[in-house]
Length: 93
Image 1: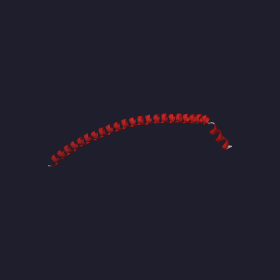
Image 2 (image 1 turned 60 degrees about the vertical axis):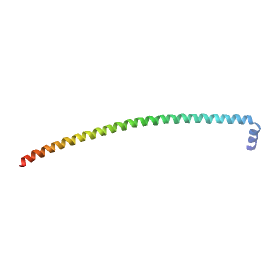
Image 3 (image 1 turned 30 degrees about the vertical axis):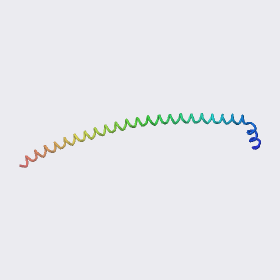
Image 4 (image 1 turned 90 degrees about the vertical axis):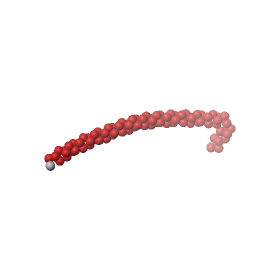
């Protein structure tokens, strides 16, 4: 039976070409759908990167502000300690 089927295809090249063209068309359509999906995923990845970049910037600014606040607090603490030492030194005399 397989021989007969092969012989029919050989004997009818037009039909074989049409079938091949149809198959190629279906594959092209599927490739197009896959390309669209890849494009959609790429858009989502880019949007995620934009959001993450904004979050990192915000975190960096917040951390810098925390460091500045802590620095100011340390300066204030040093002044208090200096005042206490100066007052305490005067009492010891």
